[in-house]
Length: 350
Image (cartoon, rainbow, N blue to C red; front, side, top):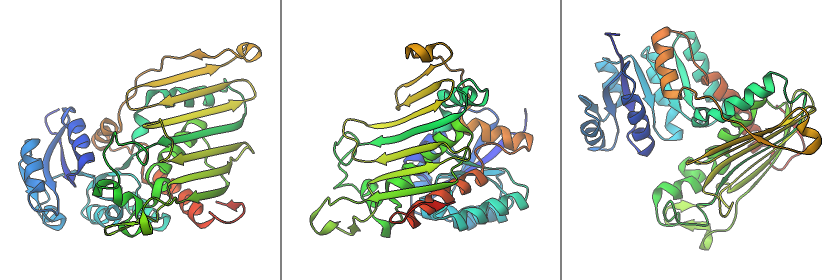
């Protein structure tokens, strides 16, 4: 292939380094520009990844226009306005999660991308876990029968341990605890991941839910410096799926002893499958066929899958949109919105 996809990296924080590292490994892609509003950061990022052009203003980059697609790695609250500018500029967009702060904004982004016939994908990173695709296959092929019960959790403990740094001293953690600084708490930060993990594997989105969110006292006056610590730290959701099955989803930053772990169990009338994933390892096992009578679980070796980064470049090259797309992320955001709206109410239909 002679003509590479020219990519702009928007935002140069920690996650942008993961994007740039991944895209640099795809021979079909060339990173041609980067943007960051903080003086000096775009230039430093461009030097590190050997990118020719750098800007401190997105409008300036769009006016330059010598790129085909953009990876939007800005803070959550900036996703909507920056992505809309890129879409109006006829650029394909690979956006970090969550797509937007609420369903209304996410829906506008999805509709605009579709209207303009632009490739649009969201970096729900745990789609890169091969085991979740294996679990989806087991469910879709009928090997576990009709789903009756689902359990899913996303466990972190950075409010307890200091392996990732001091949450009470560092801005990169404190902003995640403050609604005024754009945080939707643990539900908004990782809730979208575990919702996608569960609904992707089962092939079903919930039709109703009950939710309870909890913010714990963590500092004097519930404030540290400019940060009011009012975002939720733990969340529990009780969901009903379209076939009547029940699902329980939990997410917390107080799961002591767990660094960053996703756990999914899907129970059916013929069998069950379980996935555990951490940054350094993944396990998948299933109880199928005659094993259901002896409670035997057997490990499965999943087949490798393409990363979201490669799937995005493939989508731009072929002109066929990839998954997860903006509409998928908007539908997930609609569920999160319902959790916030119904956190102290009875069952709500979605």
